[in-house]
Image 1 (cartoon, helix red, strand yellow):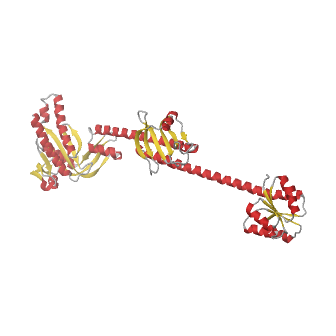
Image 2 (tube, rainbow, N blue to C red; image 1 turned 180 degrees about the vertical axis):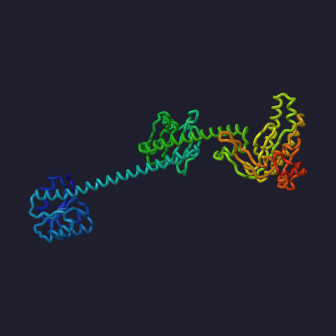
Length: 523
């Protein structure tokens, strides 16, 4: 490797001529010459040669002076010292000042060439090392950029794939594309159900975040990407040309479902490269998966809503709506067992029904029975009661379970009065001559799911429930019998007539019954 610049500092014209003509030029080196130490120092500071051939004894500034000044200016230039006179002390001093080699005059061409080769070999090795180090630093910087890009892509991909709302997801994808490619603007297109390309999100230059949209697309680059399934990069040849842009397809399952694009419009803005196109294409892989996940989630949500609506509509015909709500919202509560709590219970039975049905055809009997039971069910549900069960021509309803009701006693009593009025109006209007006998009681019972793992019923069990049933059985048509605890809880709101103690079938303790005639509203 020749071509290095070598400075020859010597006060002897013959020595300078000899070194330049017979040592340096034949080897292809470039040369500078100085006639004394001061001129040599000035040339060294100005040209910073690769090697200095320095005489020791010179006018104006000797070789040691030049060496000391080079060190003072922190110039690390290899030096070969040339001298007629030398000693061990001089050798130690010059080496201390940075001399790499020492040549004693007179010297041969071969001796000087060998000294130059040794010194420049070290220089070349150092330069190669510096060049290699610089390339390594550049490679590390490039690697760090790539790692940073991958981290950004991973972070962005993780972020967008975790969003299930499509209207929130699409602007986030546009923001991610701008972040990854350092673009000014971005836009996202999707095919609708009719295979029409629609712009669904965009972000203009200077905006902080992308916005959702829903409009037909007329972008020729997006249409081209959709047709070819390949990314397109547009790099303007001049600032007056169209803006730089990259558009990449969103592909899922081998089918293009949309297009994602970024744009730089500002004159002089950085044009996009193949690397930007590759980054955008990588992001579209995440985006396509996220969009399909969002669509699938939305389809699943709608299917679940339809299924829940069907289940609700079906089960509300068999199970109280409040129980259906509880099961759908908290399926884990659907297990055998119950808990003790205060409730109010209403029993109602159609009096005169058996005798009346003897003279009527079965179809007519079923029709009338359904009419009365439907009437009762509507009233119970209107008063927010839980319709426990139908049995023959009767029914059982619970208040304060499963939803708690602070006014459950008043609700049960008011529902009983409403049922009596509605049944009387129906009987008068249709001429059936049928009426309900009703029993109401309040107190503690065990409420929950009773039965087996395969067949269970939400109901209430306890003495107060049995007593409500017995009161209904004792009551005459159109009569509402309530236990004393109901009157006590209602206080002055109840309009009732005491009937005294009554013997209840299957119960040792007597009950004090009242006939309920009216009820004042709660304030």
